[in-house]
Image 1 (cartoon, rainbow, N blue to C red):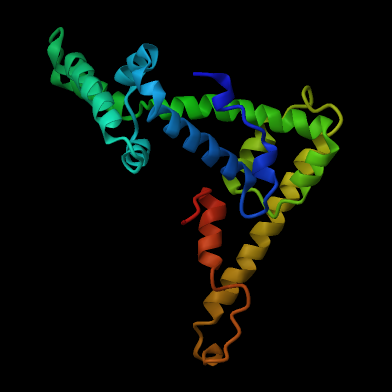
Image 2 (cartoon, rainbow, N blue to C red):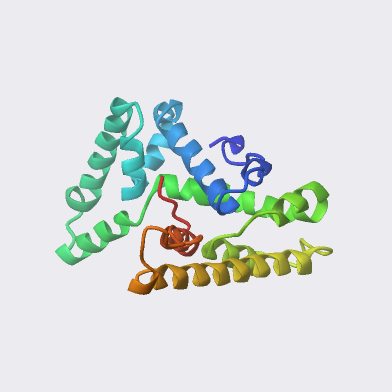
Length: 228
């Protein structure tokens, strides 16, 4: 796969401030790879060899089904299922348990997931490098409302003083403060939400404050998933 498919400028994800910017990065990479695999890549022999071998997870099969190009998807699935049949049932006889273990492993294999991980890891490295060298990006990074739990943990645990010699401490401190402050605010909003079910707080003029969407915002923070 061409490298520029994945190594897009991370500033795009940080220029807006609506949710976790790393989730936006991930979604951008995911969309571009699904678009790529449903387009010209389908006819590239080396790509077809890999899709035949790896297949696709449920999430990305469903994403591909929503795209235009059902013929491309059918062609990929045709050769993948042929390959799968040969591996599980058409070659040297294996025990049923062994075949079941092979099938289980295939369920965890996905061409799109592998390419996303490849591209996303490079984008993550770019975050560290750009924070270290670009003052404007540090401003964009520091202005974010929050980072979801998964990406807060990922960025802190993967950061290294070797690659961030000057700004490692500031970088990890910013992430920790944003995660702790946002988590505290979510807890307060959830308490408010629950209190509004007390009959003493009910009524047409009841003041819910910022609590009405506290469940959705909490789920988004904990999982990185945003309902569209």
